[in-house]
Image 1 (spheres, rainbow, N blue to C red):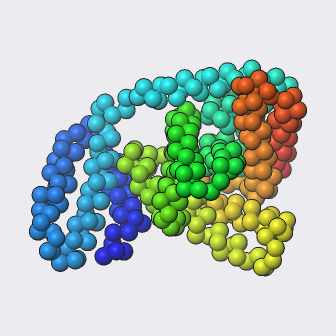
Image 2 (tube, rainbow, N blue to C red):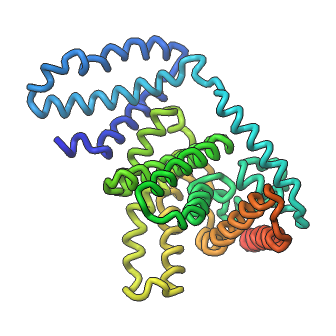
Length: 360
């Protein structure tokens, strides 16, 4: 019974229902949703009888309910009027415009730095030259331009560093959770709430929620719960390639990465070659799971993905860290010139490396 009600099983069933719902979505989706609603209320109406029902009937009802819920949510999303932009979203999009203006105001000397930062921090690629975008694609670094877990993770790490002096008390953990929940959620809306950035936000938020409450954080359960919540919010997102690639990459990290990482001989965790092996295993795990879908959808496969990830992910992390620090300090008129120069140098180096790899 416990296994039947596990978040992994319920998430899979809800996902299956959402897939079915998106496949039959039509102008009559409102009528379909209305017909399904009474069936979803049956467990409430007959709750007293269910308490004394055999366990297999209760399990079957739980499974059927989540399957129908996924179907219902997918159909409801197709009803006219469900896509209206909220006032909070409008505010977040206005903040994105302000952030782009702040980036343009910084005295970067390299022409590529400001457009690159706007792509990384606001999902606006309009300022990037066509050859730069092509180099990202040809070198297998398109995921760096598509806001994802990497960008959300950097923001989370910066917040964690900033709040570390507060200590490890329960009160400090709760404040960190609230700050990330508000800040990460606003960043998600500000960047357009792409499927991959929503997945990253939900994954970190749910993990932090479990940590604050003192409950175990099993990665597969956190991922399945994030999947369930994201599909409840927008079942139609299951059709997008960004959503599919994002969850496939995380599946690769949870399933294949631990196996590859364990192949390295035991030793000091500070061994630099261990760090290289871990980064390589991470890139390979993601590519094994996402590569087939990328080939089917785009008819291409990045030959140098391993080299790209080993060189460019650390560079991108450093670039975003220095850029965000510069923006924060500039807001209070304390940004040192060397931080601007570091950001400029890192952006030029990143673009140069991608150009070299793309030309191989």
